[in-house]
Length: 285
Ligand SMILES: C[S@@+](CC[C@H](N)C(=O)[O-])C[C@H]1O[C@@H](n2cnc3c(N)ncnc32)[C@H](O)[C@@H]1O
Image (cartoon, rainbow, N blue to C red; front, side):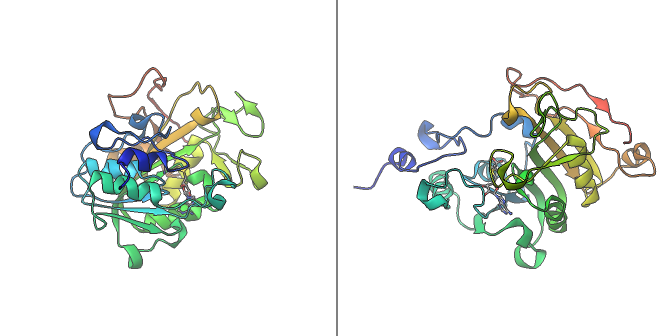
């Protein structure tokens, strides 16, 4: 007898994402902890989207739910959860299970096992929007990663990353770099920040400046919370746009290095978990 959806979900050894499926079934992951903080567009009608490091596919399915025409989910499965488990290799099993349950075709909900460094316009075409969530700090070459994504991005990138504004992986809780003038990234060789695949943890300013350097001249960035209770809550978000308004350009001055700090536009923020960051303009570093 074929297994029920719930039985197939239960048979998967690990779920990262909490994904709502038909008939009230929800996958038993824990991420994302605050989806509204990502502030992706409510309406993504007609967009072609690249979801980098898609894992179980929460953000891929979210883009399609919001009207995207097509999403390409990419993964290289480098972020191992438990080396003992399935010989340390994750697969598309959880993603495919959700894709089938949600009824998306392989054409509009495509997935490829490819490293982000190997994404080219010739191979995959261009994307209106790139999601780059939870993956920047897993990159050995973060600026090359952003440069590569910029070449295939027509409009906007949304980035989410571990940040070191409030917590330093080297110095501890409350010992980060809260000042926006700290354009800093901490380096973690050989698993010194929880796991082997964590390499560089930037400050919010550093992340924003990297995005600008890679080709998104307008960057708005915000912290998940300025009072994280632990490392998992010390995260930053940013939205980069290929277009720059005259106002942006004027405020930026001649260095081209300023960015603005905002709370995300979303009104559905879960304020039980998130402190509302104050809106402020960041001066040039
Ligand atoms: C912490 S998870 C984030 C998952 C999802 N994007 C999210 O934020 O909910 C990071 C994911 O990026 C993947 N990854 C790491 N390096 C990658 C690379 N160079 N190319 C593609 N995927 C990568 C990992 O295998 C892992 O699934």
